[in-house]
Amino acid sequence: MKVAVWDTYVTRKDGRVMHFDIIVEDGTSQKKVFEYGREYLKTKKEEGQKLTSKECNFCHTEEAKPEVESSIKEKGYYIYEMENCD
Image 1 (spheres, rainbow, N blue to C red):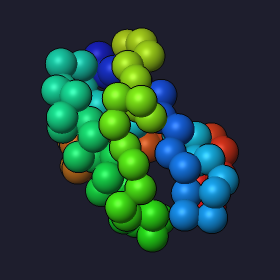
Image 2: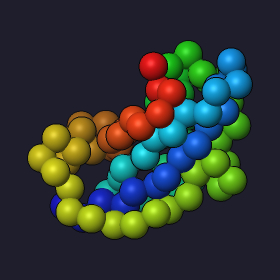
Image 3: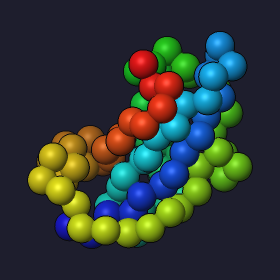
């Protein structure tokens, strides 16, 4: 499966910046990517934080690893956490 990687930086409620990738099936709309990002932020108790094209940008496409593909088939997206996502 070919996937699109969206590089995302969201300011948390405590002021730290979360850095994560939203990975979706290639061709997924930007609007849907933002919806997935907001869904993820809710799981981190960061709902309501700004998530627009300023915070989230398309980066590149690649072939999905098995765990990424499985997550995308199950819920539409995969989050790769990098910084301040705890």
